[in-house]
Length: 104
Length: 258
Image 1 (cartoon, each protein chain N blue to C red):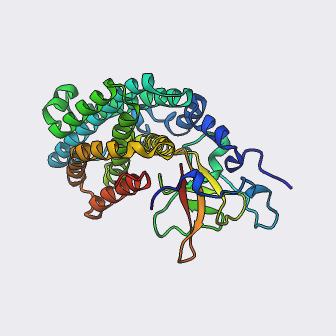
Image 2 (cartoon, rainbow over the protein chains, first blue to last red):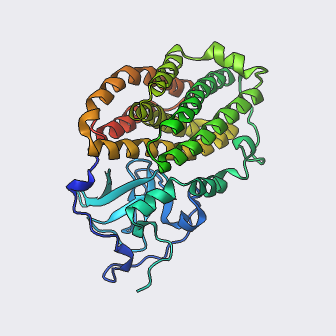
Image 3 (cartoon, rainbow over the protein chains, first blue to last red):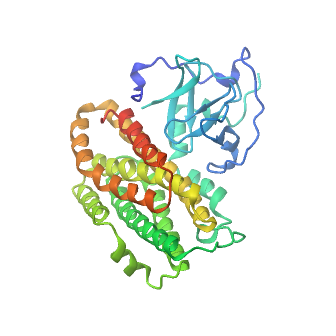
């Protein structure tokens, strides 16, 4: 899948955390230590294809780290992967799964 | 409405880029996974018994990893001067430090495996294709070509290393696994920087794609063959070869370079 270019997408402002219509998640650190302490709870190691993702999680297609949000994720949300410096937008695949496409 | 004080996804794009390229971000990141690991290994990890055949294959693999790390060390150092903006310059300086550490921990591990003169052993065991790749990478950089240098180093070399080191870590002895774990964490940044830096510049000016495809055609085989051999040497499962090619192809496809 080709990376999405910023001009091709209508990416909403990053207001995920302030949207009260979405289920909220209390994040805790899970042992991921590859970013500064204050950001660690927003990422976790991916366990491979059998790793079941929560509604507030997507896998970074660049570095395969799980990106986590304090709110459930929806298509169009913009998220960042700090471990590999990628920006991405959440998309829903044909089978209903949420994934992330890189935005350049 | 309560919003987390530190929510990375709420950052403005430029704030995000400033944060992840900063020296402070790098310093606070590596502190998290390297501070308790002298030469990359936990002091509590015990060396496993290893038969001669496995040890020899591991030494050869680590010698070739060292060639790759030396290429990246010299390449990143050259790219600091070419970096087009402050964030890229600072990031590339942190990569110089990472690559120097990688070379040091691999040399240290080679010594632990009984090699008295690792430098001589690397010269003896290095795959010629990887040495040729290093020469080509440094030539691109000496020509002042930032985009080509980043592509060769941070996309071709680092993306393949990122996959190979992860596959190797899955079957490695305990100490080598420790050493690789820290390197893998660093490679995540390097490969990500390369893809995103190139992706942003190609989005603005797609005309560079044709030239990068030509560079790719020249350099891909040099690196891919070496790392496929490494996967065989370290006993990676057959699916590992497909994963190596697949993850690399995913990257070049996202960049529109297939």
